[in-house]
Image (tube, rainbow, N blue to C red):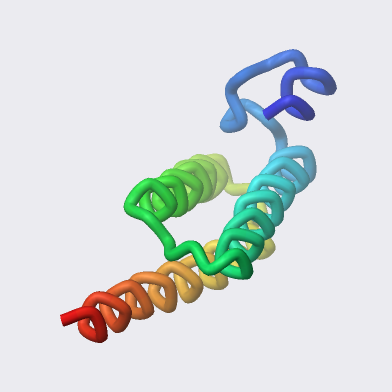
Length: 104
């Protein structure tokens, strides 16, 4: 978010154009997943807030995808990022279920 404010003087990532939005989105994803990996290495399990933040990032991408499709812009890289993120979310949610089953 700091990069967004400093370089584009906006708080709205949806208003960014193609490559600039992809830069923001990749930085957001890498920062979030890097922090999740660090927490996992410290033996901290994923919390509900982590899951909600992953869903929030996914929703930003979906909104931008719909906007791009409506105005006829190429959205190939964004689709690939959303698919990868969807796979990661499914993996994380299934691992949360497995952890809860082991505790019982």
